[in-house]
Amino acid sequence: MKALPWLADDTIARMTAWRRDLHAHPETAYEEHRTSEIVANALQAMGIEIHRGLAGTGVVGTLRNGDGPSIGLRADMDALDMTELGDKPYMSKTPGKMHGCGHDGHTSMLLGAAEYLAKHRNFRGTVHFIFQPAEENEGGGKKMIEDGLFDLFPCDSVYGMHNMPSMPEGIFGVRKGPIMACLDTFEVVITGKGTHAAQPERGIDPIVASSQLINALQTIPSRRTSALDALVVTVTQIHGGDTWNVIPETVVLRGTVRSFDPDVRNRAQELFGKVCAGVADTTDTKIDVNYMRGYPATVNSAAEAVIATEVATALVGADKVDADCVPNMASEDFAFMLEAKPGAYVFLGAGKQVGKDAPLHNPYYDFNDDVLGLGARYWVALTERVLKA
Image 1 (tube, rainbow, N blue to C red):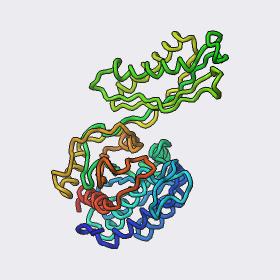
Image 2 (cartoon, rainbow, N blue to C red; image 1 turned 90 degrees about the vertical axis):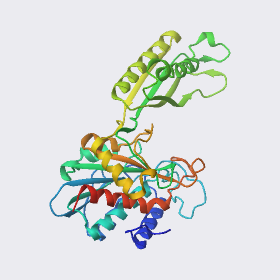
Image 3 (cartoon, rainbow, N blue to C red; image 1 turned 135 degrees about the vertical axis):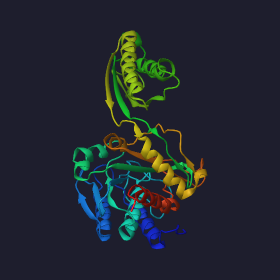
Image 4 (cartoon, rainbow, N blue to C red; image 1 turned 120 degrees about the horizontal axis):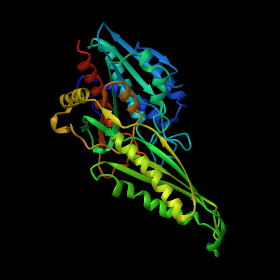
């Protein structure tokens, strides 16, 4: 791996070592104790003051260089509850857990940037390096804020980044406004009347009702909201029945709803309840709905999105920066930080063979170490742009 301009070979080597060590020892939400220790020790060795304990395992490193504005740079640290497949020498050593989303790479890139900034200090102001736990489903970013993140570490702006194997290596994607969707989830319990499978007329079949409900829910995005309003309603789980010859008493459906616009989000929730009530009425079942609001949409503020675009363009050239990238229907709890502070979230292309590389959340996925240097350089250049010396 070649060093990039103004980023030393030994920094690249350390980032690679951190990344592969973290990959081999994945830790999931609020259990990132070893990861937190590695991050804290590395920051202290750089001479950066640290604070530990926000959201349990969160770490914040603070680097000051005179008076001036402040900036927050955030990396997520947690892994996923999934089993890794493949034959990498640094594969997960923890059964049922793996870094399937690249947070090991995100953490390592920010550590590399911290090392450079601590050594060269070509900025004026304060940098807060925010290492966040529990991004995957558990809202660690929100918890850090509730624990006083921006009270203890005031930030004039805050920035995040995510690797994307679906984008070619070295490409940046950014946009003003929504860049990732909100995350809502649901659990629907359909209760009928169990009976012998050979005599369905003596019961009320919740399986038939569930099939009708699944189809009816798809009319929310396809027929009840505008085609111009991005909305996804997905049933991901069906649980019901135990044997071949019994119609069960209940069926449980679980899934997710994604959108970008708050009005569309509200409309989808309203329609969800109406559809469930209508199916219950027509099938004589009882349908109980638990609709849970999760992460809001990740929305970039305009001025900070322009800054991120200009920094990325200076690094890789305008032809490798998509300044109006297509929003992603996945979600990200950096959204809570962007609700609290102006800032921008960018995508960093990491695909070696786009379309053939394992996607995020795939058991064969692995972070592309060849973009570690570029990611660290982005953080450095962004800091030096926002905190002009």
